[in-house]
Length: 508
Image (cartoon, rainbow, N blue to C red):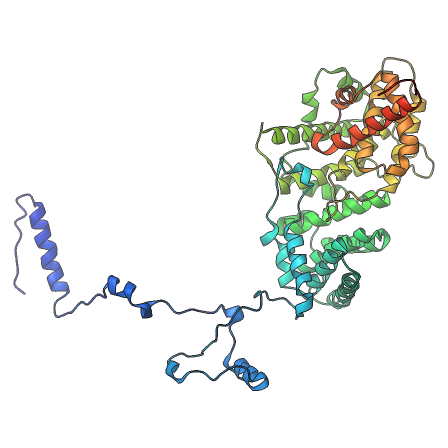
């Protein structure tokens, strides 16, 4: 190829550059024949389409296919014209969903498995809070992923899902079968190297939920104690929270729920509170609620009569109610569901650290707890407020008989201790709030016999006539309209009907 020289003393124009590139390309492609297929012809030629590849999880080996042909004799031999295919796979009408589980699942039971998967994928907070929360996507969470990975978790999750639905008797029988299988597997695993793994901890969390849904709290509390021991062997709450926070969060939730039902202190105590504080509870734990009502007479009264820790929890709960209201009204962005859950757990653990529900139950007084009558009433009212957020997997607020008894006793003691004076009206306001927050998730229809007359007397002592008057009274306390208004209106209407029934000459 002849040489060509370039004069660098003058400017190189566009034509010169094009000639340089052409000359270089001629030397680079010398003695080579470049053939590029036509894209137009490739689009017209149907044979140029990419072949179909079956997913590896569904691909059958040649030995499996030969065995099926030998046993069932339902398929024809492979065509000799496709000899260039390494392993031929027939593509028929899809008869399976392609989901692979740790154990074989018969066709008639497969819909139960689908039901369990959709159930755990759809778990969220109270539906009334949809306008305030961004519910987490559980599709890719460990609580759904473990169903496909571990046999014990598979059986336990299926049993819990069946228990929540309870559609048919045979499903209940199947649920008992699955939970029995879980016990057999977990007993062997606790003796091995995986006794404290994330998977084993997750299984015990679901088992504790299963017992809680059945009302077997004494039996489920054994699982919670086992969880505490496992966490200790893993290095403590704070360390496990850094390694697998989603699992540790559910452990702390189980600890709180069982402590509320049994009246005990939380097993993780101060360490659990510290782990929740470091997890990013951005909606509480700053005393921000005290700023909302600064200067109000009610705040001054409560702050002067409540111990500092209880006042801080009261302020945080009231602030959380205001955040929920602003999010629903569109004044701020919706809250993250996981961070909101952590905030609720932190409030619950702080409340039970101040005083567990079981203390003072036997004596019926506050002497054993160290709290005054007013502090005890406010403390129980805050627990009742918290209970409205702790719904079960089936979105129901489970019965809390211990809290119901304590709350009724607190109302009676508070009523008897009301005396004329500067703080008497504020104490009566506390009593009104306790009655109305208790009817939301604590008191049951059987309590109407004493609840309605007591509410009527409390409203008359404050001169309250309508629900609007009650709303103004409870406005200074923790309250969420979308959760609590419905039950409050029903109680107010019931006592109004009782009032008119005692005065037959008046019409409502």
